[in-house]
Length: 323
Image (cartoon, rainbow, N blue to C red; front, side):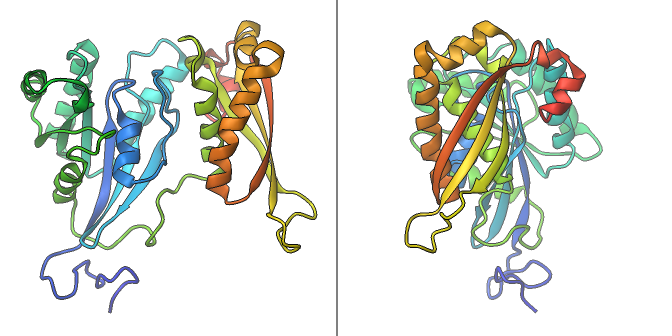
């Protein structure tokens, strides 16, 4: 008896004698280490938002890689860091909880930056994980390998190797595609035999509303001051078909998407909106393109910016904003 993906009930691939493998890989690292960019490169499509600002990722995002011999489910997480707010503590807890439930961990260390205290802090936690009851293997990845000369990359790889007990060390460039395929091969080797976990062709299990919110947040973060990423939360109020625009009359279907952007201070609200609303219009234009591609329909994007004072430190407001 075979499953729809072509494997038999025990996970073997007919005619190969080799088991089909499936499982979860958690991508970790300090903020802005290239985790989301690497996730998107491995999946081959944008499933996680990226930004030049730290702490861009706020949710665990799963990307699914389909191969004839395996199915690899990537779990992208917020960057581990020493928390200064209740939000920071909750994001760290999210990462640690995720690490206990995966088959292999991927530790990202950017090649264009020296190994620092933040990397050593994470390395110690991952070393404890590898030695623990679950004995989760850890693959160390030197990201952004395209940004440094070969000599510097070699030095970085030696530094990384000395940080802990890694199952493998792999240099990659997600932007140029350098060794991305090799990294996938390495991760698949650490997965247990088993059937596919997701239907063929499914690239992520993120709800549409969450992905829409992330696309708006990514657009809002571009080109702003360092203080804003930590203070910006985005909530989708509704995604509804516009009456009379369901596509049955030959016109493209239209969706009304209403979104609230929350910041902590009036000064931040002014940054998001811009002079005369110019910046918010640019955010809407950029985000709408991504949302239309995601939802496969024309979109009217209605953006509203509100102040939720010190929401990162307020348990009640954190719950309301989905954290």
